Length: 465
Image 1 (cartoon, one colour):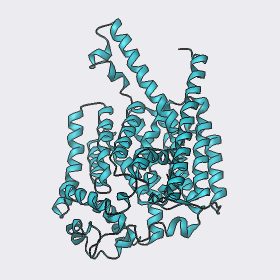
Image 2: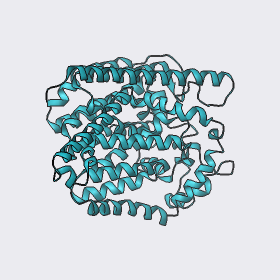
Image 3: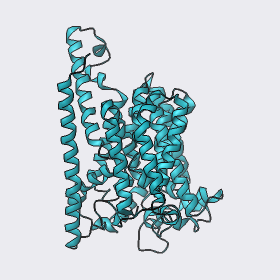
Image 4: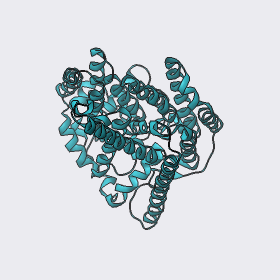
């Protein structure tokens, strides 16, 4: 079909309108946040909507980050289209590691890497207090509530025990301390630049995987992948979902085990469930055996933690109580329910809105075309498959839309008020699958915007999470 230049221009203008709405949302969140802070409203975020404080600075990571951004924007899009697949994934991983590391080093080695996970609210504060892992698991729930002897630190109490266990394991194998933990988060988090494209390729969307890959490498959220445990969580979630896209039962089982474990990294990861079901449905073949195999992996992890003495539902109920013992009780829902979305855009990048707009348009077009075909031939394929809406069941449509719904659910719950720029990273990387719908001629410009967003945030602010 010959492209319609007029339609292309209209679509481009629509993208710019969405971009303007995004910028207005961010500006409103910044201005309203500043006014509320000045009036003494307890946002507990000096530079709301981000959890950070104002500190314009440069560091020895600055020239490296700029060089990586120039290289990926200048050559990455074209090279990703033609490179041999295995080599492409290897280079993408190294580039993602370099991008995350260079952004962290803008703050310096000590402040950017070593000290990020060592403050009193973080997991490493508790590692030295764990003499016995079985005892820690058995008594974990007893220490969630605050203002009692032995209460867990903020981040440890706010997550199931798997999050703390991850860093205890690192310590047990000789990788204790802030430097090792920070590097582990970077190295694990960067695997999302491999896992997401690998999943798309296994789901039959290799061209889309190649288009999305540069956007994952230059993810603005890399600012937080290199500075929080959520960076490691992002890589683990992405790997689990990628394994579900494979055909081998062993991969399905392993993916189930990983996704079972992520339930014990964050209570909010129950929202990964719809993404997992979407991947299983999109992979083709018989759904029930795949679901049972992956489900067996999830169940094995749940049973293991339960037998060890930690009951997930009890922990969740206690963490909600702990949540409202702290800042969450004072952070106003009326501000954060929309300002969170502005923070998410600074993590996902401003490409998110236009890309999602095009994704919705692609879904509508697929449904409309399938409906036209069905009307012309009552025995057409879409009808035999169960309706014209099945035509929209494409990885580049389903996965970003499911991720967007999960983010919306997390936002409306009121259990995510501030710091979502890092908390929602495991969903953001799947949201960016929508960039596959961007026209090729504009991808380099959008990619440059992604890099500029990350560089601006990291040079103007000192992020605290």
